[in-house]
Length: 463
Image (cartoon, rainbow, N blue to C red; front, side, top):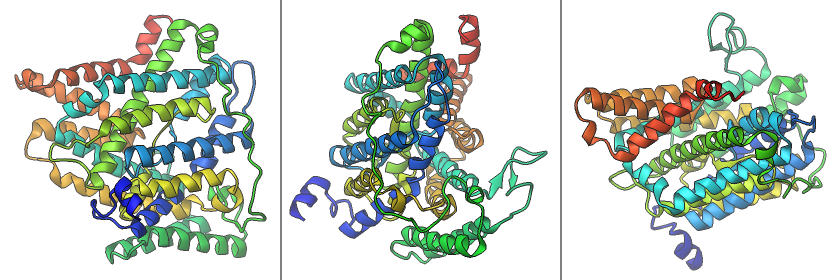
């Protein structure tokens, strides 16, 4: 215990070993869906030559890379920030990169993306950019992420769906149907009741309890597997599954430049860097703020190591053919359980690694059982809104846009980008352009390019 205290400073941060273990478990169960979803996304696409990645190998690579990098973040960064294949980033790899090159070529560009992020960290630019962001915008990022993950939970559970005449609606077609929805609603009520009563381990209790309910309901009611979404809750027939490490190391560093063209490959790498950079930045700020680990200026001490590990995770994801790995916003579930140190990551990372061998046991949690925890954590992160001065419109308006666009566009990056651009524009309008840090101007300009990427590609003749 003395060694653990020296390494992780558990008691110094006001936590306990039980809380860290509980937080690590909660984080794992809320992010375990990535072990199913990432292989589905990557395995459902073909590269330029019609090749498809093996599903079993994708499960193994997804679990192994996530497990190893989460452990490294725990020891090296001492933060309860789990790492796994980034949703959205894997979609870019599967449906934008792969159709123009081979899978090894696409994964090679992901490796280059991670190396580019590491270079930004080594030169100090990434930390300087984070320090240049006003505190109110950092708080807004945390609030926006809270709404975003709550929305993710509602959508994944099927409580919110696409409407016939509206962008979104209640359930499917405006009504709540089916036993899976019943399980989710019971799970939300259970989770929020435990949260309000401040029951230790409330999120984890709700996940486990709702999973048991889902298994019972699925057995009695004979619910079709597709009604549950990506994971149907069933008692596993076995315990151990044989892992297949065939995709590890299958990447070509510069092959994409040959098959897709130099300019196209550069644009792809730039897009990945920009999306990963600010998704991770938003997650780090949001989760660290919720854990109370930021200083008075909203900065995270020793953030250089954290940012470097995140960049390294992106490269590791490419090297393992698991797509770009990054800090996972579902880590908020662990923080909600009291996790404050990297010790929670040791638990999460170990489970992720073991998942490559124990997939039948560790992937029986349906989204209807995990999503209630995301809704509850969304509330917890939303409380940071009280630290924003809503009477000061020149900062409140960009903060609002940052918060609103994350759930409404299903992207952390879009919210941050729009907020940054509007912040700089309003400062110019108010004659306060000199008050804006020069790095904020550069970042805002990059975001202008990011949002205008399609017309830029058209102007350059890139399809």
